Length: 160
Image 1 (cartoon, rainbow, N blue to C red):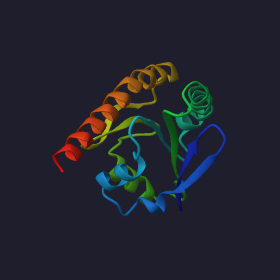
Image 2 (cartoon, helix red, strand yellow):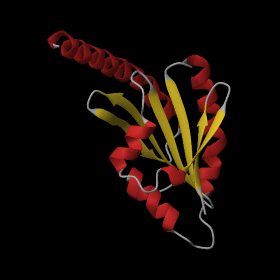
Image 3 (tube, rainbow, N blue to C red):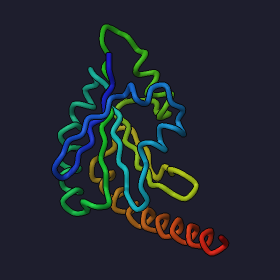
């Protein structure tokens, strides 16, 4: 049983194995996934056998393609898909432990700040129009926290 993440980008679909995250704490996993300032990170958490997940999968992919065309330098999409075979719930529980979600599909939006990753939005089975609205509103926050981090970095450099 494996859980993998698909990163949807303009040109490349990167697959990240969940095994890299399952032994981490929430803070460690988010720090690894939300790496860069000024980027809006959109994550879908889905599970095998989840009919709502299957319904939203093509809609999420279309939204990712649209948003990547509009803002290729400022957005990253990931889809973590939990395999759920023969009633084995372990990977699902690991996903819930790390990401703190209650159901599938769950969508989150994060940005990086000078104090670490910040969750901007979380919803179970939202309309894609709502997710798109939340993403667009998050660009301003991502830029704000990028500017704040640069200012904080400059202050530290001035003191040296």
